[in-house]
Picture 1 (tube, rainbow, N blue to C red):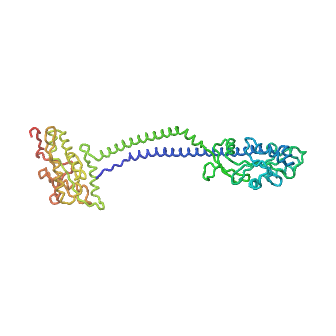
Picture 2 (picture 1 turned 90 degrees about the vertical axis):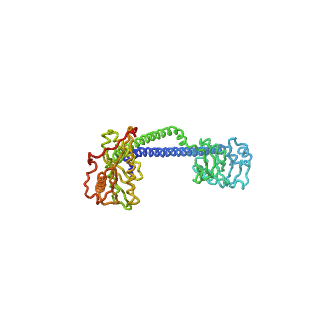
Length: 506
């Protein structure tokens, strides 16, 4: 029967190791998760800051564009020559493309009170109606708001010399983002206003319309003002960091994106050596703990296996002891479905063992016992379990027999193996054994003591028949025998002694 290797100490240490390692792994996982959350939060905050900076830059760009328009629309000379006199030559000289500064990227269009374009810097004259129709249609809302501001200022009775409170450079203007012919543009509308209250003001204003297409050049200016790098138009709906550019009514006109370097990942890369060192220390500590636990586990397992082995085996011979033999024997006899088998139980007594001890000493007797034990171990395929019951007495249970008739052959093989001579310090010790055997049909309702008693009765008969032989239990021959229990049998002093021959004499 195989010995179970289950070790409660090994299981305990394994659970201790798991209890130490699992929290560490969970802590590392939570730390990684929290780190990623912090990194993403830093990136989100950075995107929000750059978005706010972009909106602020867009507003500043609109104010700069408006200042260029207001610088033209609030001059008294412009009011006289454009609104009152409608002088085309003056307009070409002062609003034409040649008059614009190198920084100017606006197209200037003058719209009369009836809504007709009377001048365009692109053409340096009155533009064809079909060329400016789309522009006027796209700028209709900001132009109407500029007219309303003009009417409010005129209706207030304060004149235009005082200007409107809060208006940039004390002027009236409207900024907006529109789409012209499918392209986004920033428009600024300002009415021509007199600089003195003494000048007569028309009921409807003449408007100066500034148009700046949102080209790469304009985006470069916006990039400078907002400090957001890499601004560009984007049409891909899946683009990262996409920001909508809306008109005054909240409608999206276009989208822009920019080069975004996530600061969270930069911080993470900077902190990566420290994090790697920390994780390395944790891993090292975990490995050391695992190594220590493994070593403790091995030691505990070996200690427990040693203890289990010692509790089941005879110290002198390494065979099973009486307790383990009785347990295995009991398992064989117990009912077990599908395990019907035939075994032979043998009780073996070493003949004339006392003579060996008296003649050559106890060391020679130990050598004989060890030789018998090794020979029984060498019969592993024929033996289920072999035990030393005490002194020079052994017990054996064979492996299951294919046929009942094979019992005698198994016993003969065991007897032949045990009776070979033993060499001890130049002496050849001839070994003789007496064997009592009983054939068992399992499962059996008879007790262990009954089967051992039967084998002992057969052993008693073998010794009575002259020793050095094997006898099977026979109910007729052994019914009247009253053998002593194993371990307490006495011998007849008249019996012969174990034959000892000098190796040199032989």
